[in-house]
Image 1 (cartoon, helix red, strand yellow):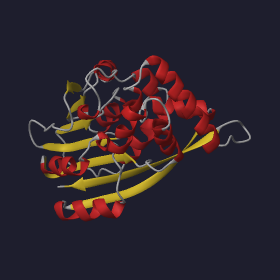
Image 2 (tube, rainbow, N blue to C red):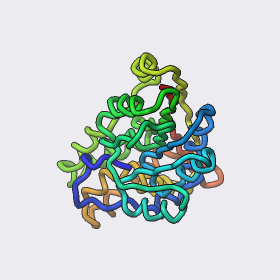
Image 3 (spheres, rainbow, N blue to C red):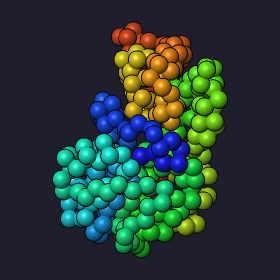
Length: 266
């Protein structure tokens, strides 16, 4: 999932239960990405940052005759994935440096490459590892400037942890505009399909937004805090979210979640 270089060695492992609390919402983007991969002869499929196997399960159903391999660095996520998708193989490797053992037919990277410092060069390398006609399918959250993430940065900078967390906030990847990725990868691809979708997720108040990001975007911050600091940080974050996300008449709040997608053909 997350690039090992971005977190200390003592950081907590990913929590599959917390991540899967919003499984349907998180898997929706994986389904939308998979739906745009055209039919091609497929023998080897790789799911990078496979997490608990929700996206790997989709891939095994769509490519039933292929060898499917999930790649992740989280022991917790891999343990869950192995039980969930026994038809697939799962390996523990850092996707920042991973290469397939043989040319791949499909490389699928749903909500994972944005954690890498230099994801553009990684994408270029992955494209080169496909067989001719193979597909690289990528989805990256593009919410750096959404209120949820602005609140993270403000809380990080306004507390006793600022000296530890401000550098983290400054190091987080900013996703470029679709035109930038098109200009980089169109000359390297036989075909490029690129689009952006803004999902709207009704959640149970600011608490729901906190729970969503505890399983993803907050991790680089929380990994550097002790338990007491974590409680304080999340309380301050919740207060800012309450201001940024007004409740709807039914008590829900609406979390905007932009995502960038592209499918490249070698």
